Picture 1 (cartoon, one colour):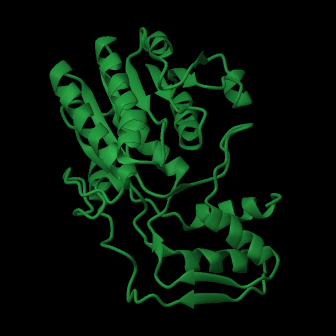
Picture 2 (tube, rainbow, N blue to C red):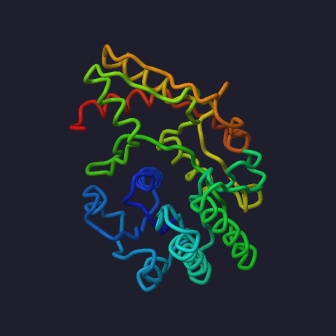
Picture 3 (tube, rainbow, N blue to C red):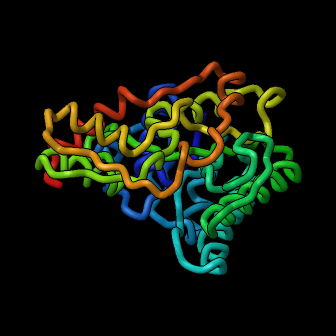
Length: 302
């Protein structure tokens, strides 16, 4: 299958690209810097098109002759409501429209758990975003579904949660959360570490997340179309628990202090991951990969 990918040289995108290559697909990547990932620049199975999400000509060039479009790129983060609409949602809509008009038959959109915010934490499609980023993603989801109905496309939304991992290819990107970087540095220095009690999330390793993209790309349109697939692990982990992993792995003498802000239990309702389990048999856990990630971070100059 020929696949056009935005954000393929980014962190999550690099894992998606590697997974697609492992399954024998031919890829065209839209990239502002075509030399950003040396392993991709040297791969004959990859065609690189220089451009951004604002570059309609580059997008049209990349979409020509493609069977599918996977949108991973994030154009905008932060700012006002209007800025998010103009710089994130609008380019995304234009991409979906261009893909449909180019004859692409499948579209996968990387949204976020921020799109449903404080709603029911499942894949029923309900939304209650808590910030402009979540609202921008939710609006993009809605436009994708409308375009899919209009053109008769197979389109699905993937909603990742907190995604982590090491670079997956030579020269691949690494965007670790500052909390992880700081806890590893503190553990390495035997310095005290503090976190809010019960503050955490359901992490997911980027390699597991990429499996969801592969499964949906190969899915039968009669069974998996215009659906929402939340991709997180089944277990909630607090930042303090992750810090304890770092302390144990590094043989650190750091003491972990919990700040009580009146949270008697982990934040929020556990996110429902039943759709990916029932659809593809996936039930992800993240602890072992998180340990590998912490060890990798400990080898870097932080």
